Structures are given as structure tokens and as C-alpha cells.
Length: 407
Ligand code: SF4
Image 1: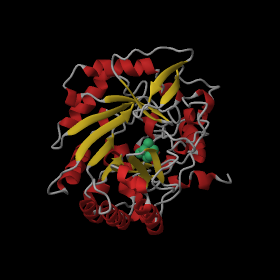
Image 2: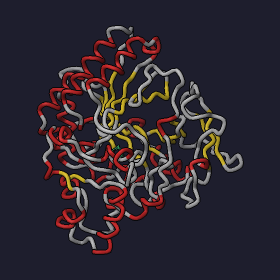
Image 3: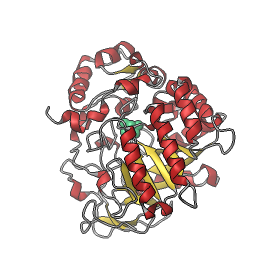
Image 4: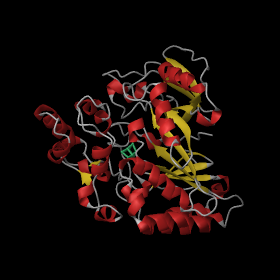
């Protein structure tokens, strides 16, 4: 299909991405190969997977298939990691990154800034495994890995912007930031250090990653990546773990490596995850996941419990906002260090909901507020509707994409 590689180009592998601690045999990219490890995939399922994979690429690390998935078609994690027909319902017309501050510090397609104090850098669109629910999978994200030229262009602008003094955190996201070549992380470190010399308050780095879950070998075995992260000194990592079975011994080992790279000022480890009906939309499952993370040598704080993204989330995994709030309520009677925040992602920014906050139906929508106080009309019918259009999903109709000031 013409345009497929433009929009979905990011879901391909580049030789550079493969080179950093990955061999081609570590990633499974064909259904036939998958069936050698999961022989219970039927011919009909294989046909369906191939049909979906022709539209949305398929890639899953061998480690994940062998250590997390079960050879059982009833394993709910298949729906998150392996192609399925339900994906074809996703209309793919969302423009999540389009809603940003009008006066952001940097104007660049990889620089996403919804808050004056925080920006997100899409350093790559590559991930070792492709989550089937990923809200970016068929969106207009910048393809490929960030280049040296792009890093300089971004930081040259940041150094000249008066807005840089408001920035407090730079999030490295993607795709998978731990999959970019070490040389890029080194260059980002250098430019961030230079930027920090021009501001009174240090701008810290937070890394959003699923690599320790998908493919922990990259962290455990790539010395160049480890050295680059040692130089970068991120202040925090936010892990994307969605199910207790994803907490493997190798994941815990990778967390220890990431933590011990720093002699002092060791990074904060946090975990966040979307809720999926039938998979983890249950306080017992989530508590089990938190407990398994807590059994390792690194302390991992539950951070965000994410109400399903309206885009990407497969139809049968949707929850209503009240259902998500009920799960939070079931988790809330615990020490504060073990309780996550329930956040509702909207294009306008995150809205945080309390366990006992009253959700009033104001005529088809709840009135939520982002953490900066921006009002958002959030549709009450958040469960999948086959006729659903983007206009039904929580966007303030009076605000035009890319032009509003969200403060
Ligand atoms: S790890 Fe994140 S960016 Fe990568 S496919 Fe999964 S949800 Fe998307």
C-alpha cells in the first residue's frame, strides 16, 4: 500500500537499531516462525494474524514469547502481543501529538510539549515488540531514529528559547528510547548538559521504557548502551508493565543494572500501565503485579493506572471511566507508596481522577480537568462503539489542533 511505509515506517527495523545488543534471531517477525514456539496457533488464527500483519506490522521478541506467553490460545496476553482481527476496527485517524502548547520551547516534530514544565522527545518510532494496542501504531509519528542533525537542531532552539527556564523535565519516549544507538544517547547527554548550564534549575531526564519487559537482554548485554545511560544519568525510568507474568527474573535483573549504573543519585523506578478489560482490569491482578515487582532488588513505585486510551485499545478491552475508578478504589486502601494515580489520557493532557471523586454525567460527558486545569469534555460512553468517530472522543470542540495554549 502506498504510504504504508511513511506512516508505519517506524515499525520496521533499521540496521542501526538491530546493532545495539540485538541479533536478528532475537526478534520474531513472521507468523510461521511464531508457530514453531506456539504450535497451538491454528491455521485459521495464523491466516487472521497474517491478514492483520499485512496492515499493521508484527514483531515480538523471542524472549517474550518463550518466557511470558503461554502456548494457549486462551492466554489473554496473546491479544496484547500478537496480531488479531479486532485491530482492524481502529480507525487510525487520531492526531494525539497535534495538541500542544502554542508557545512551546522548541518547534520540531520530535518535540511534543503539552505542559510548559515538561516536554517529550520522540527519539525513535522503533520498539522491539509491537503492542497491538499502541495508540501510535498507525499515527503520523516521525519515522526512524533521531539523527545527530536533529539533536543539534532541537537543542539549538532550546538554548535560544526563553521558555527553557520553565522546563523541568525532558521525557525520552518513542517508540523505545533504549533502542536508539548509544551514540545518540551520548549526543543527547552532551546537549542536555550544555542546555542545563544556561538555566538556574536543572532539567532532568525521565525514560519511558518497555524494553526490560520485551527484551531485557538489550539492557543486560549492551555495554555501549549501559555506558551511554551512565553518562546521561536519567532521574527516573517509567516502566510499562501490564501483567504479573511480565515480571520476569530478567526484567528484575535489568532494573538492577539500570539502577547501579549510577554511583550516586540513583534513578527512581516507577511503573505505569493501561487497564485492559479481561487482562488486568482487576485490583487483585494489579496487586500481584506490584508485589512481583517489589520482590526484586529494586524498589518500583506504582505511578499511573491509565484509563484506556480511546485510540488503539482493542474494542473488547475498553472500560468505562466508572469501571476504572472502581479498580482504583479497590487499590486505594493501601500504603500511599503502593497506590497509583488514576489518569485519563486526553489529547489536551492527563486528567487525574480520585478514588471517591464524584463523576457527574453532564449530558453525555464528564467534565474533567487536566493537571493544569484545562477543562475536557470526556464522553461517558467510553466503551467501544463501532460507529465511533474521533469527534466523539474527549476533545474540546472549540480548540483547534496545534494552536491552543493549554496553560
Ligand atoms: S512499547 Fe509503547 S510505543 Fe512501543 S509499541 Fe508498545 S505501546 Fe507502542
